[in-house]
Image: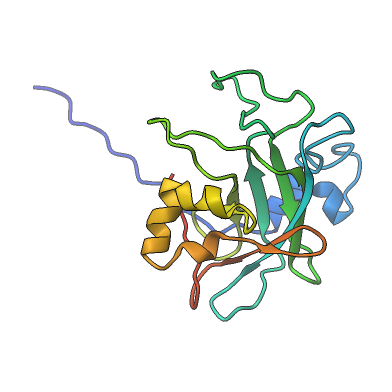
Length: 204
């Protein structure tokens, strides 16, 4: 008779707590000597190609109050639409651009900030071009599984209209939640976890 299968209990999930900041952004907390600078703090250098931009934003709860202890990460292609990844087969990405950044939300204002470049367009597997966008990953208290979303640019109207994903969300009346606001500093993107104008999140 075959051995009875053994089933293990699922490890319980927990929300992101203060340990996330200690482990990922110690310099932000004033803990020095772990890293020269927090990982993901710098995405480019003086040789990076493309238009330099600043992205700011906040993570808002269901009543519109900013979360001041969230961690936000972004992932994007370079100015030519290429990712700095071994899986990139379309060409060589800009070696002076990391494509990945991490920012802790400011404890006083709730703001996150990234100095990056405007991304190029990336094709879907069927060849249709997506509009320039930045992928976001959000971890925060009360969020058991980190959330994924993306930010589009308000001054890319033609490309936005051609983007298959954004076009579908626009037809459903939710696409505007993914379009950033143009500001004097660059672009501002508010991520709403619940409530009115809740941001569209992706199951990836």
